[in-house]
Structures are given as C-alpha cells and as structure tokens.
Length: 345
Ligand code: HEC
Ligand code: HEC
Image (cartoon, rainbow, N blue to C red):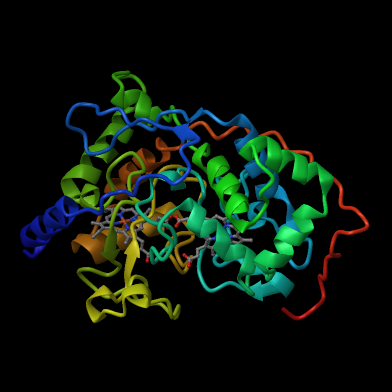
C-alpha cells in the first residue's frame, strides 16, 4: 500500500511551498480571506487604484498591432470570452505556427508564485514581455511594438494619463498589461460561497467531491486561493507521464536533473472552462484529467462514481468572470509601421 508514505511526502512538499512574490504593480490589491482551516481560500474581488492604467492595459491586451502580423493579440490565446484560454491543445502563433505548449488561463494568474509552466518569469510584468517578441507567438520586437504605440496619438495620451509622464517604453507597456491582468480575478464561485458559510451553495454530491479531493491528497498540491499556482511539482510522481511533448518543465530553467518534468501546479479555478488539460493539452475532459491525476500523482484508481464527484466539485470553482467591455483602440496613423502578416519573423 504505497498510499500513506506518498501522502506524507506530498504534505511535506506542500509545507515547503514557494513564497509568492510581492506583486510588481501596486495598482490593485486583492486580499485573501482566511476561512477557518480549509486548504482553499476564497478569491476576493480586485480593487483598482489606477483606473487609467488598467484601461490602458486592457487596450494593449486586446491590440493585435503588438504582433508582427497585426492579427494576434494577447486575447487571441487568452480569450476572455473562454475562461482566459484558447481551448486548443497548443496555441497557434505567427503564420499558423504550432505552439509548443498549452496556453494557461490568465484568470487569477496574479496568484501564481511565478509565471509560465516552468516558472521562468517572476511575475506578470516580466511575463508580458515574452509573447510580443516570441517568434512563435506575436513575432514582433519590443522596439517595433514601442514604435507602433508612439506613432498613435491616442496611445501617447493614454500612457501620459496612466503614468503621469512622457515615458512610453516596453517597461510601461508591460506594467500596464500586468495592471490589467491583476484585475482578472473570478470571485463568488459557488465553492467560495460555501467557504464563506453558505452551506446550501454546494450539493451533497459536490461536497462529497470536495471531501474526496482533500482525503485523497489532491490538496497537497492544489491549495490556496487559486487551488494551485503556488508550487512546482513532478508530473508523474507515482507512475511516469507518457507524452511526446519535449518540455522538461522546471529543469529547462534550473538545468537540474531533479527538476525534470516538474511543472507549476495549475490553478483549478474555472477549470471547467480551461480545457484541454495538462501542459501538452492531452486530456480533453475533466474526467480524463482527474483519472490521470489520481493514478499518476497519488497511485489511486478512482471509481466512476468517485471521479464524477470530484469533477462535480471542480465545476463549483467556476467564479464570476471579469466583465470586460471591448476597448476601443485608437487608430493608426501614416507614421505607424504597417503590419506584416506574411513576412518571415
Ligand atoms: C500565440 C499564443 C499566445 C499569445 C499571443 C500570448 N500568449 Fe500568453 N501564453 C501562451 C502560452 C502557450 C503560454 C504558456 C507558455 C509556457 O509556459 O511556456 C502562455 C503563458 C502566459 C501567462 C502565464 C500564465 C501561467 O499560469 O503561467 C500569462 C500571464 C500570459 N501568457 C499572458 C499573456 C499576455 C499578457 C500576452 C500579450 C502580451 C500573451 N500572453 C500572448 C500563449 C500565448
Ligand atoms: C504531486 C502534486 C499533485 C497532486 C497530488 C495532484 N496534482 Fe493535479 N496537477 C499537478 C501538476 C504538476 C499538474 C500539471 C501537470 C502537467 O500539465 O503536466 C496538475 C494538473 C491538474 C489538472 C489539469 C489542470 C489544467 O489546467 O491543465 C487537474 C484537473 C488536476 N491537476 C486535478 C487534480 C486532482 C483532482 C487531484 C487529486 C486526485 C490532483 N490534481 C492531485 C500536481 C498535482
């Protein structure tokens, strides 16, 4: 019975969680209520302190002119109409290139101890610089993105309003995008209502699923306000995970053999919306993802009934989606570098 020792190793892992970094842009604050002794805590609504900055960040998030093609925005792969993902196994980038890895949701990404599956970006601001210059994503350069924005008077005015000065560089771009992303939280899920004391918020079946999620050991890795996002853990702890995806996870950053196939534990908030699952997008349904997790991480085979209960619980983690009205983007001018959808990067 390998179950007991595994669970205690996991609990040990959970006690050495990464300390979440101080958030770079203090434009919003989210407080995390501590509710009794439950390992999951409610998500609180974001409070915005620099409205102009958040609005600018929203424009940039939706603006395809930050890509070489003029066709790909952050929202292309993190579609806020679809839980902040693209619902593809791996994303489609510049010139229909096949992306290397599944696109994680941007919803509640502010709770992540680090960004990306392998944690190579420390925070949202550092992360936002990546895709613009990534030849397989937006395939642009920071200098060109800044040239585009500087050529558009509407943007020059918006940056001045947000920052109170005339600086418009990649630093300001990524800071504004991060400020917008800080607001992308999903409070008031049925599970959070239950956590806050509304005992009728969950059905018997869903509550049974939560109890199983705890007793089976899922909470060792999936805990905190995001139900994940706060540690790196091995995918395939008890039995190896078979995939043709070459990503090594944390080892790609640290170069350490013991970090091979360690990935950032994904958030399970809104997991009902963020299919397909895992870094390679190989699990099409929650049923499949839960079955794989139980077997490979805990050495346990869930019955169909147990699996259905856990899935029912996971669906109660869908919160209020951010109400995002489509931003109007200021028009380009004769000085704006033209989009190059068919050029090689
Ligand atoms: C072509 C698709 C694509 C575009 C465009 C794109 N992303 Fe991503 N994004 C991804 C993928 C794929 C990953 C995961 C990459 C990895 O972990 O190596 C990711 C990761 C992230 C993460 C980390 C989330 C986590 O849980 O680790 C954030 C935040 C994010 N992107 C925000 C943005 C922002 C902001 C933009 C626009 C500047 C953007 N993305 C543009 C596909 C895309
Ligand atoms: C040892 C730590 C650990 C344990 C225990 C664990 N998980 Fe995970 N979970 C992870 C990691 C790491 C991933 C990402 C793996 C990957 O993509 O390669 C993940 C991914 C998932 C996903 C897919 C999320 C997504 O967006 O792709 C679901 C659903 C999930 N886990 C549910 C569960 C359930 C249910 C249990 C208990 C039966 C459980 N996990 C136990 C570490 C763990």
